[in-house]
Figure 1 (tube, rainbow, N blue to C red):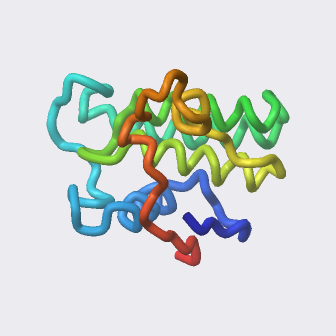
Figure 2: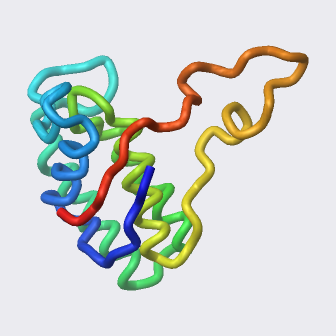
Length: 142
């Protein structure tokens, strides 16, 4: 997946929604915030407030140096997954947001699921199909 290191406001609702749309396109109503209950994530009517709070917290963590860059990205990822703002693709979206943020903060992107996906499985067992490399290319010039 091609990722740009261009400076942009990664912690804006517009970027979060646009990135989701670029990832999923029209599949899964890309960019549309969830409007129904799920067995994961917060109540759907809390999504706008919680998402705004998370993005504001992220900006404050960066501005005041509250946490190291890696921890800021991990905290952002964790809360974004808890909010579960979209009907589909929340995990992939949250990992990409965390990677983009940590790279913008001058660090290397994370190696998600390295224990499962990054090394051969022991004893000849097959790795999960979920570990297949991404097949989409995203240019972040949006």
